[in-house]
Image: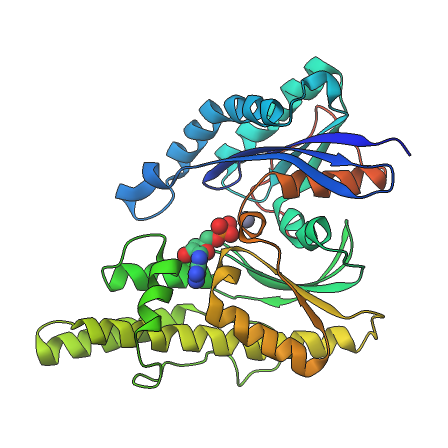
Length: 347
Ligand code: KG4
Ligand code: ZN
């Protein structure tokens, strides 16, 4: 087969992204460029992503991202063979902006269009960066998502379970807010936790008493709030050490829940006797060293290799969308101008 160059677009949350990816004749992917314009500063005053602000910023930035990605790859649209775009799930204004932009490019340049599920983009990333064969187990842990998937193919996923309320990244962000630490919470809570004693406060490990891979993280945040208020009531404030200990206790609880549920997901996956068992992670929370170590330990105990793509590809980006588009394209998937933007789209 001929090499194929894909343009990928992503705009489903608070990152506007475009990437150029080449699939070589031997099927190997190569990222030629990957541009991400984050919107953190735009939402900083609001304590979360504001959908209307996000959608406007995507609409303004998408074409700039596309131009930057093509320039960085030293290519023009004439070199591109297909356009892949996140068509859901996500904040609908942003998804619409991306889909409209991709339709315009595809129609104008006469290119095939492929709508990609954002979660599939994350779930296929290990194959973009590593030599990973189907089926593998995926733990997707980000600010918006938390689920275990058996990935059998680019359009073939089995969901084993996931959070029934908050995602862990969201819990990290809320914990940071409760303790007066800046956003995004994850890295700041992790930094504090390094200075803290994880055994001083014992936070709950929700749903560990229940079978299966479902998780819950919202109770943890409530427990943290209650403990914080007890300390404040006793001492009229939080010391630095209190704050570090709260962070350490919180992080240890998240780590334990994810590790134990990973053990169960691995058990279900290994029961299928995969030839080369692999557990892969994606999402911003996979950046957390303690959580990652917990997962690696479980994987090693159970005889599965652990694969973690580099952080820039674990968080939202368009290279993963281009790559998922390439796999779908090879399977014969094509969309046309009726491609819809979907706010909800379970795998
Ligand atoms: O994948 P991502 O960039 O965005 C989506 O949610 O789609 O993930 C961002 C989330 C945020 O909630 C952030 O606090 C969390 O990942 N995060 C972390 C760490 N770095 C980022 N959580 C825990 N520890 C970290 N080191
Ligand atoms: Zn994402």
